[in-house]
Amino acid sequence: MEAITTQKYIRTSPRKLRLMVGMIKTLTPKQAMEMLPYAQKKASEPLLKAIKTAVANAQNKGMEVDELVFKEIQITEGPRLKRSRAVSRGVWHPIIKRTSHIRVVVGTKKTESKKEDK
Image (cartoon, rainbow, N blue to C red; front, side, top):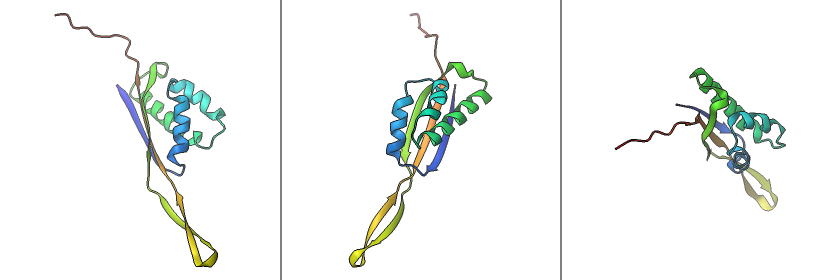
């Protein structure tokens, strides 16, 4: 059984979010929720929010928080906001503001392995 949450149109570049995911992907969701508030990166806030939502969804489905593991944490690129800045000689330079989508899937640990007897 698994619980899925999605956060869309986060105004942080995917590259910055992926740095935070690399830091927590081996942890359990409970450990990640304890560690992310102390990470001194702005990208940790939306990631923490998405993990908390996924854990709450899992609790509503009847899963135990201590038994949860990350099945998938996916950061994808959202639409880009295209802005411009005027510079000298009547020229403009593009400013691209990137957005991100976060998808977190948590599930329970599989403690029993089923073996088929032939």
